[in-house]
Length: 55
Image 1 (spheres, rainbow, N blue to C red):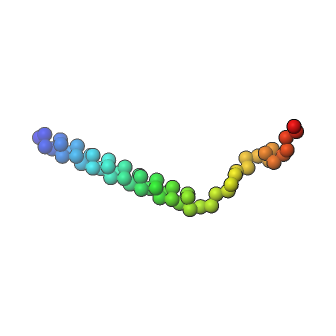
Image 2 (cartoon, helix red, strand yellow; image 1 turned 135 degrees about the horizontal axis):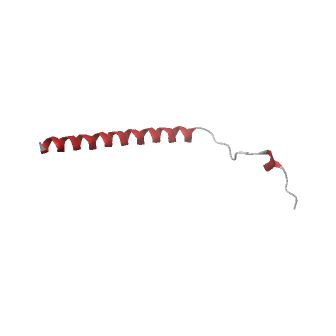
Image 3 (tube, rainbow, N blue to C red; image 1 turned 120 degrees about the vertical axis):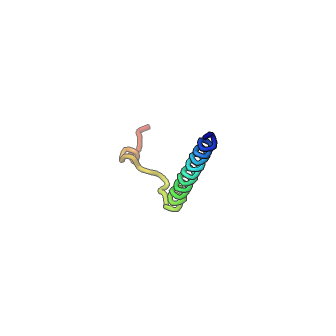
C-alpha cells in the first residue's frame, strides 16, 4: 500500500518536471523569436513628445 502511494508521488513529480521543462522550452522559443524580430530604437507614445518644450 505504501509503495502505491510512493509510486503515485513519483509519477506526480515526473509529470510536474515534464510540464515545467515544456513550459521553459516554450518560453525560450518565444524569447528567441522576440530577439529575431527587429525592434525600433524608441516607441512614440504621443505626438506631444515631438513638440519642443519652452525653456
